[in-house]
Length: 170
Image (tube, rainbow, N blue to C red; front, side, top):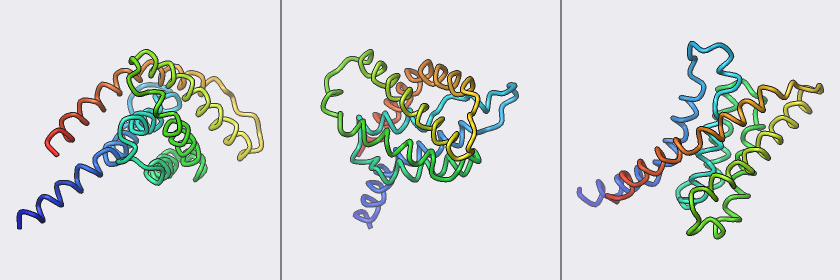
């Protein structure tokens, strides 16, 4: 019986990054009583994908990024596949550059995140405009970009703490 519990414990720990990311996406689309906040809320999905791609890509592989993006598309009403593609691109870029991040300060990671989110948001904007066959006002994307960069240290701290607590006992 104990080996079964140990396997269940290992499974739960290995699914933790994906489950937490799913919960963050749900939290990011909750209706708050702030005018137009939904249009410019921080992109928690990109933040989570970026974090896990650096620190635990073994527990957050590309299919997890794809499913997270599909989940975000379904919850936000975005064309299905756009966020999935954006998160796959973020995951691929960060995993391919993972060695660069080893031993770097948080400032370097934050700077790299700022560059990554700029590319991700630009890709999202271009794909959305192409899907709708019209130019879309970029101002909500710019505000979301700035808010996401500003919130990155807080979410990184939260993800690092939960990773430490959950993975420490495993």
